[in-house]
Length: 304
Image 1 (cartoon, rainbow, N blue to C red):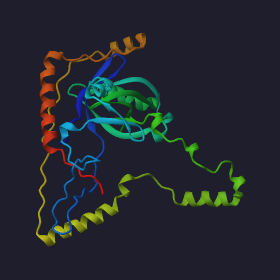
Image 2: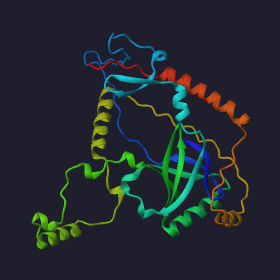
Image 3: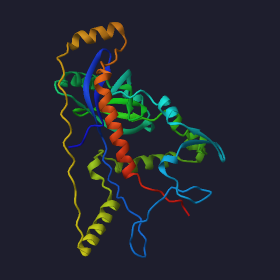
């Protein structure tokens, strides 16, 4: 069973619904290793100094921003931490809008919000209200060290958290040379429009995602399996451990909270656990992660 990215709360008005954030996509790309064609040994990549060609130890590597060609400003880890949002596990819904108003270009990455134990009522309440009203909750959420804009949307029995792009991340179509004006400006006749519409009608159908498959990947996988079989190779797959059990939650008077939210028209942040209790675990986790990263971090080799 997949692991949750984090376990926290979905907050709107004065209501806080315990949830787990789960990935809503599955990567199916095929990954390849680079080998030396002469002896089929893995090619190792190293970090090298662009001038001396000498390998640079990880402890000597720093982050820098190139503000001009060949000119850099070095950033300390403290600078990056100061700019990063406070790490917390809350999907904070700030407003609700008509879902149809969201330009599809803003959609970036889906996640699934899974309710905690005894939190089903609040979860279903929000899900059905969004479905009946045709609205989406616009929220902010911190995933790892970055704050994202997101939309909370109903999808079947689930609440989907769709990460959104910021406006500055989109390219304005006006930056490109596009054909402006009406069809008549390009000498497109009424008959041509009619025939194009008829063609589209004849090719129209219902959207059924399962009808589409990555045929290139499937063919490539078949070739790989054939090569493995001919070489007598085998593959091993380790099952992922079960996700930790969600914590129980208290019974909530939703009607009272809804009435208070409507009167106050403001949100109360979710209650946070005592820092004294959580700090040691987080510190230990950071140390463990740092050690693992140091062991697994691949060396890089200068191109060319």
